[in-house]
Length: 261
Image (cartoon, rainbow, N blue to C red):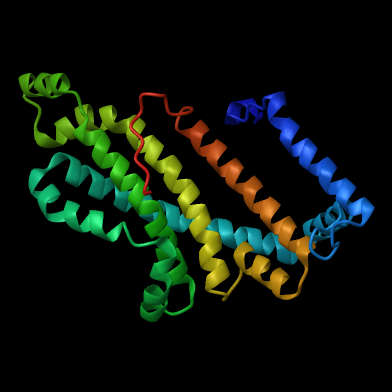
């Protein structure tokens, strides 16, 4: 699969800033201005990256994070779509659920950790639930907005054709809301990936890239810290590009996009 098919279109101008930063980084390291224990020289970083790639522990951590992320993102997205459809199409559900939903989503993501660890311990369940919470709100909000924005003309056509509620939802509302739902899923992917690393870093049990990063920090291995950060960014970019390709490309400028800010 080519980079273009995944939506990774690289403008050469976008490479200017990274090249300049790497050049400045190299110059600072070579001149001795930068502390090599804090700003690791590029050569040392490349050696650390090569060593990490050959390490089974590194790939085990990557696999654990991806599995945890996939479970949390899928669970949160499914619940988000279900709640978003209910609130966006059924007035009693909006009256009952929407006020609580608006209140709960104001709680910062990582503020959930003390509560979740008290309820579920420091194991896998607390981490996956935290990731699901991170994914839930963007999907729920965008799904609700997309369903509510279904053109009145389409609704009237469905009524003329005497669609029952399920058929109306399946053939009119959901197709109309698809761009907004796709946008929500894309936002949720980024939120869930951030939640994955945060959960692993702050709930320092088991395995994962967040645990790997925390261990590198405790060992004062700044080279491995930077390797972990670069890996996190690369994986996040690949996940985002893959999802966009699976959803049929980028959201258009007219798509409804609701964030959890």
